[in-house]
Amino acid sequence: MPRKKRPQKNNKSCTSNSLRIIGGQWRSRKLQIINAEGMRPTPDRVRETLFNWLQNTIHGARCLDLFAGSGALGLEALSRGANEVVFIEKNKAVAHQLTYNLALLKSDTNVINTDALDYLSSQSATPFDIIFLDPPYRKDLLASSLALLIEKKLIQSHTLIYLEHESEEDFDWNSFGISAFKEAKAGQVKSFLLRKADSSTPN
Image 1 (cartoon, rainbow, N blue to C red):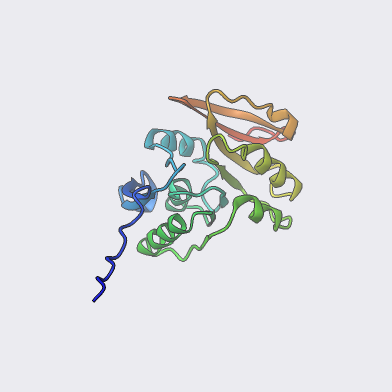
Image 2: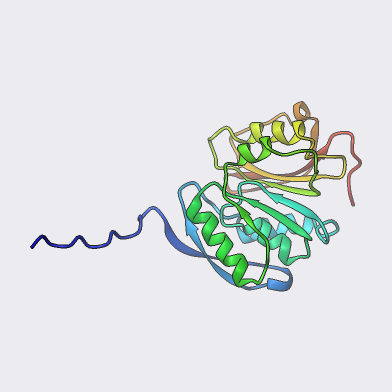
């Protein structure tokens, strides 16, 4: 008789690791995440800096975590009082793990498993209060995402945009009609908090 094939092992490019929520109602909770190709959860110290920047605006906010990955930024936002986070993640396995983690936290938040640019292209003018924009590096996604966010009127005068990019990159934010009022650098990563150039700087 022919020998039965053994079940194939999981793809070694997707290994398990953990993410720790650092503040809010889920503080210190550890969640399993998948280390898929190109995914790099925002480090604890960078998240701490970001949410210090957002401490006066996060409560009750409607947020978009556009390239969600592990969901580190969106989960932190929910933990600290955001009213809603829309998670967009293209990788099916990563989106499934994020959905599972949200269920563990007893959150009814959904994860949309789709391409980020396709999602933006399908949207109407319902703006967000805070947008987390951390696309995979060296894919030329940052400029395209910003252009669509503006075109679809998802950014308004009150909207705050957090983004990260490689330190060797340089962008002219004014060309998008936005300006940076907070910035930091950690290792080879630059991070910024931006808003419309004609908007007053929040406290």
